[in-house]
Every structure is written in C-alpha cells, then in structure tokens.
Length: 152
Image (tube, rainbow, N blue to C red; front, side, top):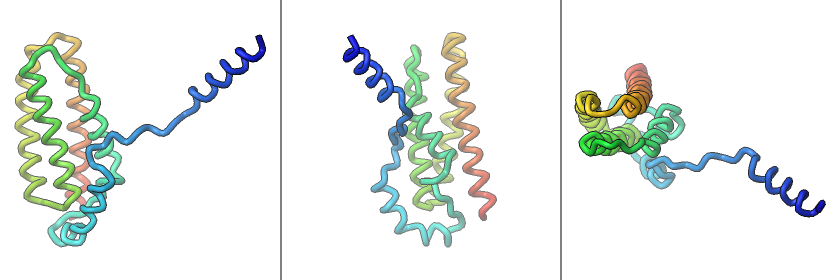
C-alpha cells in the first residue's frame, strides 16, 4: 500500500513542477546566427532591433502558433495569410531589411482590414476570440514599430 502511494506522490511531484516552455518560434536559432552577419548593415540602413530578445516578437510568434481555426473558410484563409505575413515581418526586422519590413507592414494592414470585414460572418463567440487575437497582434506590432521609430 505504501509503495503505490509513494510512486503516485512521486509522479505527481515530478509532473507538477514548473518546466520551461518549448520554443515554438518560427525564427530558429540558426536563422539568428545567419542574421547576425547582416546586423552591421542593419544599423547603417536606419534601424537596429534585437528581435531575438524582444518580448513583443516572442508574443507574436506564440500567437501565430496558437491561432484558432474558425468555421468560416474565408476567415481561415485570411488568418493564414496574416500569419504568413507576420512571419515575414519578423524576418525582415531581424535581418534589418527596411524595404521588406515596410512592404510586409503594408500587407499586414491590408490583411487586418480584410479580416475585420470578414468578422461579420462569424458567430459571437468566434468573433470575440478573433478580436482578442487581433488586438494582441496589433498591440505587439505597434510596440515593435514604436521601438524601431524611436531608435532612428
């Protein structure tokens, strides 16, 4: 009786301990090492931001990986487009590509507006979930843009 109780308590203790969250970022460590080569030219081109240590970029990558699926296929397609554009936006910032960042930022705005128009086809619960994700994305992108503009 004591042995199963001990093992149950041991398993409970081991599984309940805090563990480090896995890195689900689309920006892998290999990408960062390659991007460091272009870091010097990024500062000469007008902006420098360490996306690897930026909390807002990490939040965006977590939102990209956890975006829910919706019943409306048009909304899902536009959400996939938004996620792809967000990844390209982070890549452009990390590599110091100003024209790429500006282009993807415009695409982000377009995709965001399309999703806002498509929200009317969702039910109330799905609309609330989508709105929560969009607000968090917009807030994090705004913080990144502000930090880039303040360093210019």
